[in-house]
Length: 124
Image (cartoon, rainbow, N blue to C red; front, side):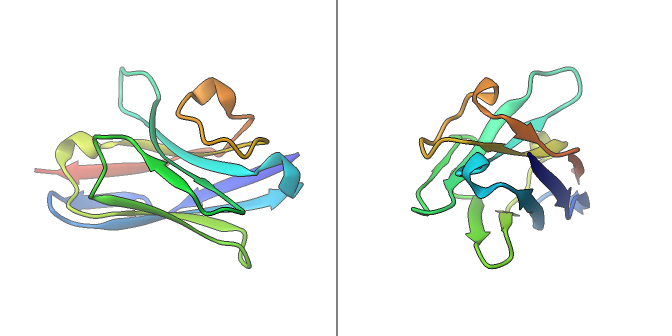
């Protein structure tokens, strides 16, 4: 089993920054790839970014490329999402997810474990 706990959400003005954290525990071979997804009210959950625990390779959705940075701290078993130049359309509940494959994926159905989510609200 894998447990994921997100933190760092909040209310910020447009143009501001937030850093989300995802603390992971449980079997490491069940969380070879970590992802961030988000879900705005009334919409489908969408991919934001993913990173490999071991290789450090990463991938971003086009909508956040150049503004968001995903990183990991292996010693702390924590994945981060640094969000800069935030826009009102970034408002959503952000979820951390883990999958037991080294292949990065943008598909939510490919992730086996999910955190409870953290709300990010960007005001205009």
